[in-house]
Image 1 (tube, one colour):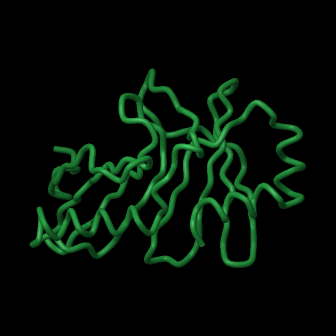
Image 2 (cartoon, rainbow, N blue to C red):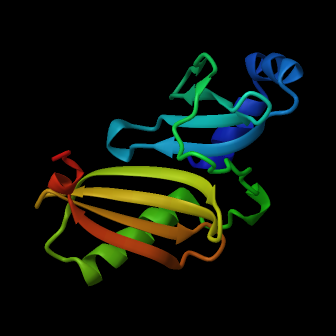
Length: 165
């Protein structure tokens, strides 16, 4: 299931509508998916008043809600609302663009795991933030515009660079 139908299904559920009545000041701030793990989406709603996030997990037949939790972000960083009307590139198209970019620019770094986040990033807007963990123990990160499908940033680094000295 693509993102927009998943969101529509969530928003039409009784559990979400009940939650929304008590949480009117929250907004849609991220969507998370690991394609190799099936059709599950994690959809996050940010509460600016308390700097916390509520995540809804959408799996094939069920919708579950995780308790509100602290958000993982850098100090002073804003959590922006996703402008769904500007998200014109569907999940499958974003993955196709990422695959094309990887094959053209990093052919020796084939993906063994993919992590995808739709988010709104300062200066870049709504992006598909796609990270490949590669066969050669690298991470290839691509930020693809959710509006036009262009790769706006990319980087390749070794997973060993994440170790603390």
